[in-house]
Image (tube, rainbow, N blue to C red):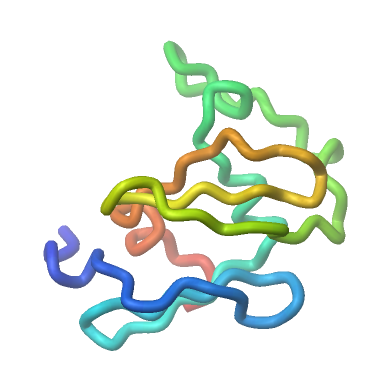
Length: 103
C-alpha cells in the first residue's frame, strides 16, 4: 500500500518531448512513457466500466502520441489531452504512483 503523503505530487510536467514526469512529495520521481500512459487510459471509452475489459485497440494509438496539455482534476488526479485527440481519461495520483512505468 502507498502512503498518503507519497501520492501528493509537487511537480507535474514533461520529462522530455514525449513523456510525463511527476515529482512526488516524498522525493520520488516517476517518468511515464507517453504511449504507455495513453494505452493505460482508464476512461470508459478505453476500458469497459462493467467488465473491466480493455476496449482500446493498441494499434489505433499512434507510436508518436504525446501529451498536448496536462490538467489537474481536483486534488486527486490529472487529465491529459493527447495529440491523437483523446482527452477523457482521469489518471488518479494513487494509480500513477503505484504504476511501475519507468520510475
